[in-house]
Length: 426
Image (cartoon, rainbow, N blue to C red; front, side):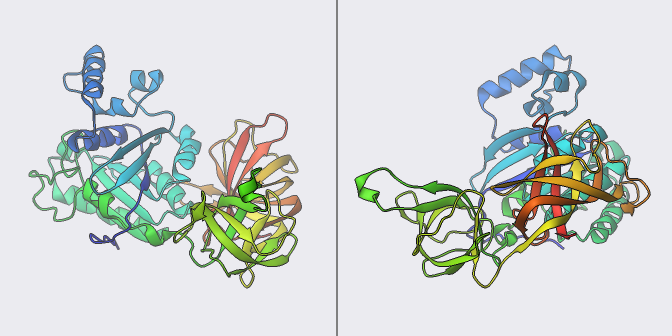
């Protein structure tokens, strides 16, 4: 199931998120990895030692590296999403350490929304729990192609191979049920560092790679959508200098496919067509632009284009509709209001919408859709239909995670109330 390429020339920045039940050791794992890979500065280590002494810990509590809120340190849990950057000689990383409590599901969705890979911890004593199902389901819902399951606290089950094998079987069945493409399952002890950076002498029966080795070598280059050229326009560039007097460029981030000079493009929603004149990065042509790159595109023709429009391949257009069906994770304390009015933000576009109906709600215990429960409260995941006041152009989320995602905002409070993954036209 796993695909590691040790010789790939374009490993690139890896964004990953951690998840798991409360006290499964997410923050400790990250702290241990940073410590053992020598990614902690001396002053940080001194501060950790002092904080650990104040808390009465005999050993240095490495979880404090990511538990930044005072309430987190007092309770020994993660509440908010903690982001941390680090690098090894082989790769750069951005970590999103997310909470384990059910009431912080929305925080996990936030942290996972930009990640390439999910790290899900499982307590070796307890095995697969409801939170494991919830976090794996969310990773699957967000179309994460890579999941690393870390069976932690193996030291508390005497590094027993049978305990790990049983949990591994349950996790493999779960991954198969949710159609996760690329999974890794390994036994670790985050506290003691077994199989985190170095191979464990306590588990000679495990023949796989260490946690850090997997992160350094997992291949994500081809995860993006290279088949469907999409370019949401964020800003029209008109330099007010003589050198670029006639320059008119359209700045944004490539959401899918590639663009190069000579490509025929269609502008949405006007359906006007033109040809790409240049793809620029600062004051020079962009080399091999790919999805996720921020560039400035110029066209051969003068066309009225503004923020919210989208450039697409002339022979490959997204869907355009006002009636949309999507999965949402509800963020707000106020429940979802059927026939409620919200602001919808999708790529660089904005529209007003009305929620027409709740089709079903996900029962996390069974991973099945429940069509009888229509009340959507904070942290619930549901399938809904809505209607916008103007057409939006999109791809299903499974096809393109950028043009297939959106957020809903409460008009009255300006709060983000939901994150949505578009399924199709309603």
